[in-house]
Figure 1 (cartoon, rainbow, N blue to C red):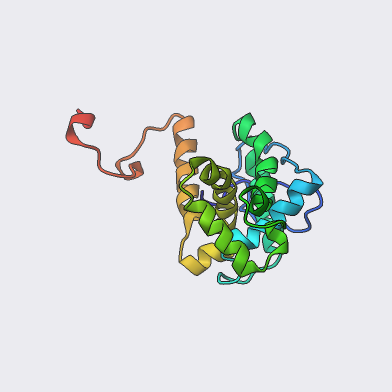
Figure 2: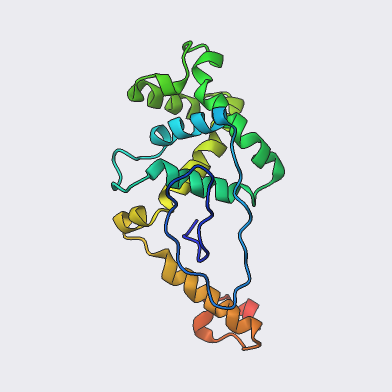
Amino acid sequence: MAESVHPAPAVAATPAVAPAAAPVPGDRFVRAQAETLSAGSRRAFRALVPLICPVADGPDFPATIDRVEGYVLGQLVYMNPVIRWAFGPLCRLVDWSPLWRLRGLRPLRMLPPAKATAHLAAMMHSRWALVRNVLYPVKALMLAGYYDQPEVHTAMHYEPVPFIRSRVSFRGRLMAGEAARPDDALMDLPEEVTR
């Protein structure tokens, strides 16, 4: 997901949050209070971020784990209540997956990074859908939080903010009663749609 045009949510006990673009004047959107995790879920979450995200190989930026955590907890409040409720326990399940997959007695956070990463790769390619489905939401949200950081955008030569601002401006014009212009279209519509 591209960087929000609204301020990033403050997260309790998180010293750094990704900088965000200023709100659009006249926009009345107010972010909901960020979700929280129990101490055990938070410990598992923070241990999994460097195993799932390419932190060691990607751009170096301060408070990486804090910023990914701030992003994920800020997004969780807008998700289905089942996902909100399940995310923390899923982080703990993934962390303790060596035990329930009969691959060891210690959680991933206590394994050498190479071994823990290999275990996660084996989970992703498991023949059992249930094993894969335990990891999918955790991995997806963490990667979204990592890849939405400005330093990662810069390293990838990805600039979503100007595009988002143009769409927000377009929406503002529509809300003010102005008609859409031809250059507002994102793509050419098929002829049968324009008739």
